[in-house]
Image 1: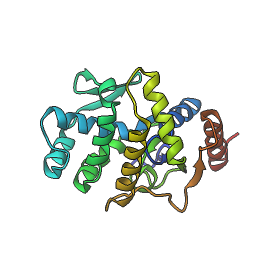
Image 2: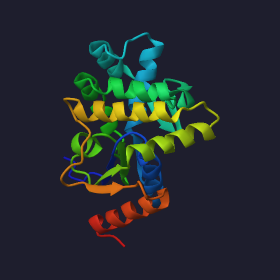
Image 3: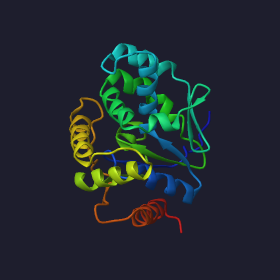
Length: 225
């Protein structure tokens, strides 16, 4: 029997456009840990469903598709089967799709083990909506990273315009408000701050400050220098 301790996990949860992905990637790089972008998995499912003409409201078909999903992340790229689809899944449409497919309990169950498989030595930093509550409830450090919805909308607007994409701040704000409501009201694994999670509001913080706060908190939790 293998009695070796499981690799440590840093769980960073929070609403859309809170910057948790960028923060999580940098924290993972600092510690030399693996990185799990759970939102990308749901975006991949939404994209695969769109290509196969599966409606995002069709829970049975989506859960079947989720159980068959062949995905991987390599060198900063997201793969669906043998195709790089990083650009396609980062669209606003796929962000909306990810939020819609994620409300189905059967879909979340089908993707549970897929996400847990990312837990490998020497450790993992995962970001999403339920990393600390459902995927890795034994995470060494749990963080709820958020910001005012207006700040998040402005950050998303700047991100899109810098990529040369058309963007409308008002529409982005309305979409984020709708996603926040959908993610917090779903029956399974709703978005919420756990009692044992550290609240990190980045409304008035930049990415460097957020990263440093989490690094310091993990070192304290893990009792490392």
